[in-house]
Image (cartoon, rainbow, N blue to C red; front, side, top):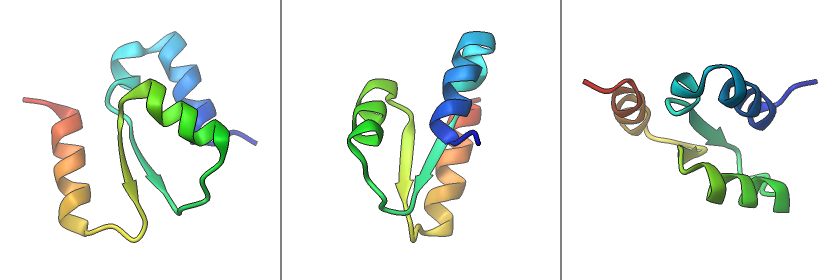
Length: 65
């Protein structure tokens, strides 16, 4: 099974411009792998539960002008 980190890695290889637009959502199940991943990628990550307005802003920012 592919998780969000795996999908991001695949997208980074094939579509780097798309990967830069990823917004991650985490339910708090923090693992050492996830911590290292989020430190490395610099994409926005919203913790659950998140405010719908924060999600809208994150998506809007990731799409760009």
